[in-house]
Image: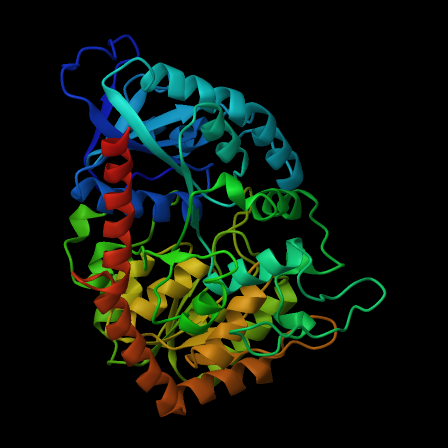
Length: 490
């Protein structure tokens, strides 16, 4: 079931004329482009909100699948995709990606091929329909790394293009050096080689993003990353959902090679002690708020929050290992386990939920930002998705890292060896993480004052970065000034 978070939303009638505005005053617009992934859309929307507050008009173009998953139930005529929707001042336009309403299951590779085929044509139609020959001057297009073809569309219309990098700057440095053959990386002939890059600790194969390993099974993701990182001249700016104080060394290491500019953390405003109603982020799954009342009854810094995102599914054996560790820890826990589609119940050990009801709570989804902000939370057992990590950093929450794929192994390395915010679980040779290993990590995070101290310092640094005059605030303003300056020069 789709879920629409409590945001101010209006719908435009497809039959309404787009030329009804006064054309005497030219509007300066920025177009954001992403496909239907919550973790890709939300950072762009939050950057867009900041640009909107600085005088630019902002539009998001995303796929129709987003409409079907999130907004469809909010309209009387759900069969028709409206021309646009407005979320807290940001117009959202939908384009076809060849995937339809998402009912037909496809692999990651086939989906990336589809959107790579349909996306450029349909995005071009969006630009021509909504921006050309109107009072809306399209001054800049901002994409993310997984839709690199957007830069080619922008070039066709002579519109400057920026990329919002939605992983750590460390990953940007790794991928840039890998796809441009600047450093040695593991190969089929030498799969055990370690990688030594400026601004980062020594990276073993298990610390590298899965897409650069010779064992990577996905063909499409390396393809789109290579398309971007081998053709950086197509991009006028590379912005990052991070902050300088967090990744200073690796950012500095790229300054002369191919600079990246931090504009984050792009997290929900409630995590920065701002009004949560001002958030423009979307939710694709309905959270279970009952867990908040449960948290209210737990002592401060007593609860292990466990969540592995929306994509990762463990075996019954691995779930049993986690369950035993949580039970044996004698700590309170809040465990989020998202059911697989078509699956009635998660295969937890028989009787576990009932036996541990005084100790913990298991829910299918939760309001993560509220959970991480709650004083009862002591640590976060996480799959190391970057958005989740930034939310933990912004709330000052130590972490236990359990990475699975893509950028997550490197993110786990950052948690343990660069940010010093927690520990990383060590799987066996078969990839299985034993109960005793989870217990060890829980005990270490609960007793190590270093993690709490570092988490508190980075929480402060994150807030300072986005506050007025902070590093990310200055970078966003410089970006806006350059857009306005370019307009004045034309």
